[in-house]
Amino acid sequence: MSLPASGRGGSLVVLDGVTPPEGDYGCVHPVAWFTARLGGALLELSTSRPDTALAGILSTAIRRTADAHRDTCDLSHVRTPQATVVLVRWGGAADPVEHLVLADSTLLIEEPGGKVRAVVDDRVDRLPRDARRSHAGTDALRNAEGGFFTAAADPAVAERALTGSTPGSRVRSVAALTDGAARWVDMFGAGDWARCLGVLREEGAERLLERVRELETSGAPARSAVLRWKLHDDATAVFAELG
Image 1 (cartoon, rainbow, N blue to C red):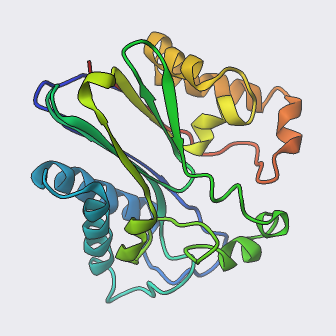
Image 2 (spheres, rainbow, N blue to C red; image 1 turned 90 degrees about the horizontal axis):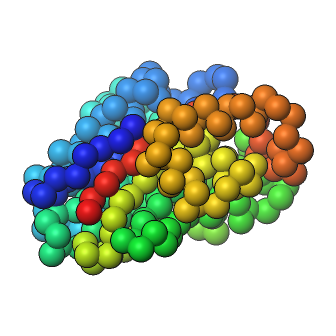
């Protein structure tokens, strides 16, 4: 998906819902319900509260979403619906471009000269090898000290997100990729982040995702070295030209 620039500013939100294993996970709602609620709250709050930092926006959005099903669901369950988050907010040319990244989605920030910086929360990849090989091992370190963090039911997790800002004059474009889309770079090595952003600009998000699917089904050897590998993963990419 490509978004047009706006002189009045705007926001970008990309969520990747965490699909639980088969069985009870303490909630009567599907993950899609959770991501729709959380994403809608993030978009509304990031524009209606321009003076609130993005960590505060995420905290309020998580609390609002949790309140919507706290009376019917067990929000303490380790597999309660949750998601990765990329949130970007920009104003006019003189305003900073703010960002927040939580869990294993990726944000790309392009400078006017073409240099691309990736903001990556790599705490999942830094988990002990044995933990990454099983649901039980991963769950023990989910939203826990020394582990990794996702947007679930605890608003305090917002303080664990990677946040920052860049002067608006130094940002040409931004792109957000779920881990399924980021495979083009970090699993298959088909290009670097700058080339990935170039594909988004020149060919569009749909073509980047098609390239990922082609590599997934081609028997590319890189996949055998990835501990958390599965044939396909949900893949979303959003690209926005800001200047």
